[in-house]
Image (tube, rainbow, N blue to C red; front, side):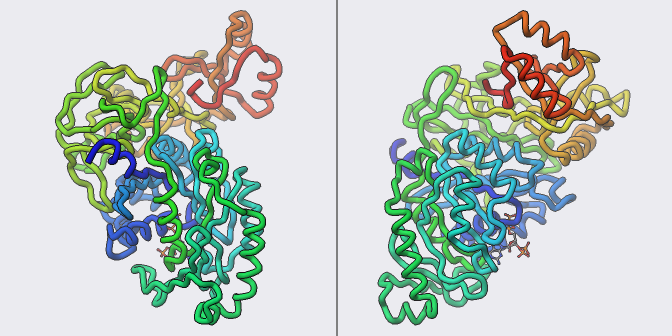
Length: 525
Ligand code: G4P
């Protein structure tokens, strides 16, 4: 197949939600509909086993929280679909943000009883920033749910995006009968509902069919009225609005019962974008360019406890990726060859000979890769849009075993390259500071330093509110700021200046007093 055809066939998306909304269940059902697995429950039960597909890390077993982000590929309707799973837990939000940089579109799962939750709102902010096309799946309609119209309003208001309901639920809770698909104008439900398999499809194209009316009785009149209303408010679905990230097509359903799952999947493969051009600091890279380029968006440590090496996830951006071909690791300028690059199909990880734009390739890394690194055929490209976000929790980190100083330094360095947290050095006292977005990260770091690097660390609280990168062309003002805020200044790993505000008030005052200085809340500016 030609490169262009391979590109057009690929759909790489991230699935995100607040924990418990049903992301894992929906992912499994996608795999089930794609024929990639035979029984749902496989992905989940694997989480507990060592050979887990979506969660590899030891810490996961310890805490039962999904901390890892993984990739699952499958074929459906002639498309090669790559699902990027994301940790729902808010302490790992940054991991999720970075995964979004490798996704060409996003599906957001919302719990119909809870509506928009905190984590979803934050994730949507990142999608908006990147103008990522978003689809919404309103899940758990088989449970008592909020009113569907109210849900639409809430989602529009809270996520600050227009929605366009492409399906509509018939009944809800224990009386949930199925979903009317406005996209292909069919009603669907399933007989012999099973959590694990698909069951028998019941489908009607004619809403006036007496059999259909009987099937959904007594909801017939209500469905007619609601559909009329919906047609009035949301007349036509405009593809361009979805692709520009202005409107989110929305589907109702119940992932557990399979209702509505095929509807979103079928629409997704028709409308979701294939991999497009990506901006680098140097130029725009088009996927159809013959030369391979890609970037590392995730580094996964410790998948096999017997081997301490890491797996770096590369998103292929352009050209054809080939096994054993010599590429250049742009940051170091070194040549790299990947003898056993892996891809992820459903639950299986397998060595591949080639990959195409949109694909995610896992390569073994002995500590050379860093999040954001590019791999090319020689051209110096730096992909943008993989920022670090302002951390909000800080602790001084101290070595707890004097003889293990080197191990600690190496461990910290590698964990930071993986993007577990950010390391700063205080200007005033030279002490190392770890900044994170979630409290759990500190435990993860401590645990991993001990188990992977044989180093022990101790923390000391540092009650700061937020770190922001500062920048100004007014050198005098910058000098004055440095003098005034000497105690709160630090350097990040790239030796860029960071101001650690003690409180929202302190930050506001600093911004007001020093309008000449720009305070950045993510590292890319
Ligand atoms: P997450 O990945 O977003 O965190 O959510 P997950 O799929 O793990 O789902 C969270 C819980 O919600 C699970 O129940 C799951 O079975 C349930 N669930 C998911 N989709 C639906 C749905 O459409 N309807 C209903 N009624 N429940 C749904 P659990 O009790 O935590 O786990 P399990 O024992 O059922 O596996």
